[in-house]
Length: 420
View 1 (spheres, rainbow, N blue to C red):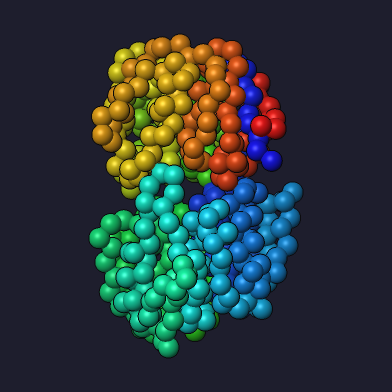
View 2: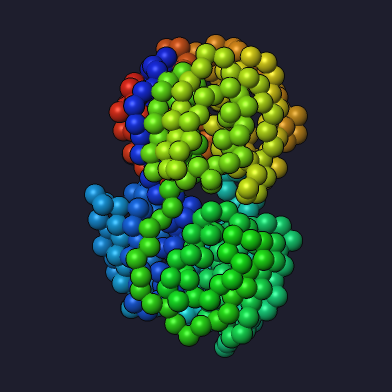
């Protein structure tokens, strides 16, 4: 059943909120569980739709698991895994299921995954993944929509990514852990989620050097063991709640966060005049009635994250002046703009740049979520718009935010979920 959020705006947020584990870290870690014939224990796993979809894909492969949702703990038994087809229905719901290619190829020397198309925010091809797999010794073909990868033996090689790719880097890391000899990945993604995957694999017995840098060296090993690993906090959820506190002129203590993962974002939020008190794993946000206009430009980590572009745009709607928001990662990542305009926002698009004139009061209306982060931005706008905002198709938001409306309610937001 389709659902919507109904939000009564103009409520100041106050209190404490605990950030969940990172969805974008949990997904590759779940995929990595099949590299060991014993399995993996993961702590701090968010109970979100994308995680549930990945678990369905793992079940199809023969994985048995126990998900203790109260403790956010998953214990995985991968002893009975078989490299069967990952069907279109799974890929359609979550592109990150392509992350199963690397570990299946590594452990079984073959993988059958339905070839993904684009998604709402852009084309996102997997050609970089495939070319890297070929360099490791895999044969590749497409048959009836399936990407079929096979090899007699994976051998280490030099791999250079022409373009930074997070899932490509993760896929090749996992494919390389059992490859004969040394694999070198240059221009590797250095996102915290990639680092988290590497750290987990090393604990399992993988030999990886250069973690956190653009140059990775992976020496193949024979097997990986079962260990327990805690998923890092979700930096995007943390950034979303920072903006929620700021746009409502609230006072919110954000717990279970790693501030070092948000350096570029926090710098821009401070430039906007928001009062931040940053501690070891807590950020205290004190809102202000005056917001400064700030220009941003998205780029791969450690630059400003594309996954926080839409949310930051909402903050700029409260700014006293004009800001420019340039999107360099995904070509279709301004779909929230037209919906924000419905609420009264003054935004003009010039190619991949949004020109945001702040200061216009927003008024509640019916708006449509188009993707995960766009839906979060519409909720944020509804928090300070006058009257009632209804955000439709919130299944997008449920893919990546755990108990989002419940956390907002505890902070004092007037938000409820209804059938659409």
